[in-house]
Image: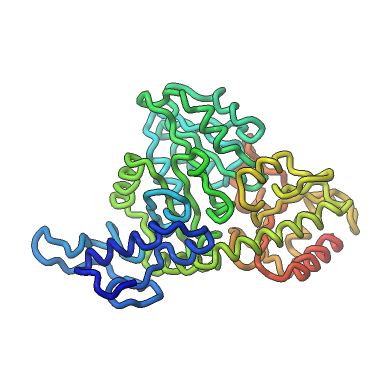
Length: 419
């Protein structure tokens, strides 16, 4: 990068175009987008602007547009640009957590509006819509979008504001045809006579695995705590869109409500992004090996992994995975059968497995370099108990990390054998 780029604002503008204007592959973009050398000093590692406010040159004259850290922070701006570039969108808006990002997108729906939601979502998403937004007059309607994207039409109404889903879903790893849903609602006139916005939670995949905006989504978001950060050491959320009106509203909400991430958390996610492409490859290869191992066991009732194409546990949407995703991702879910060494029920065996692994740490969350195991029914999805979205009490969810494949398989084999 040339040293002489004029005044600071010109250097900043050049930096913001530095990666976006290049026809780089995702692997290269993940290293460089938002990670340009510091425009003031040339520092290769993005600086952390740990400040709450900024000196102004005069009344109404903020220096280079910086006024107050809730409204904007240079480290946060880098993260927003980076993830927007990786998702192929124009605007990134960062929040203090994935839950905060979820809540801010949900704020696009007004009292009296309806939101169509896929019938397998994170428990916290269900809790938000049912226990926070429904009492305020925002109505969620749940529908199976995985079997047929055209199912969305059965619950559309003149009040539909958003169509919202995960793919792969949490925790059943169902897939939703993003382009199919977008096409199915293309002619629908929802709230305010406008076509509903398609919102995709891409947390389970990451842009290294799929880019929903390329398939017709209007808004994509992440719990950046997961694959984007990748090291289980920060909590963060981010939204990306190319819809100007949606971006402007989300920016307003970001500032007005104030659920913004701190600069150090943004730095940690930025650092994680630099290895995202490499990590995603290892997550996927380990998950494929784990899914294959589980699928070959007679004491496992079902295995859910989008990369299984053959056999009794073949994923029903493996063809969609091949078309829509760069890999099948790093998440695997399975249900052990009853019986085993001690004649236990499936639920009892699931608990025993979760409590006896050594490399697979019993913990909520996912997407970190370490492998995790959990029982969604009483952990991440306790909020959907007793609802139509209730999870099988014996379902185990695995987040496959980047450890050696042989070690992960040995750990899981020992746990399943003992159960």
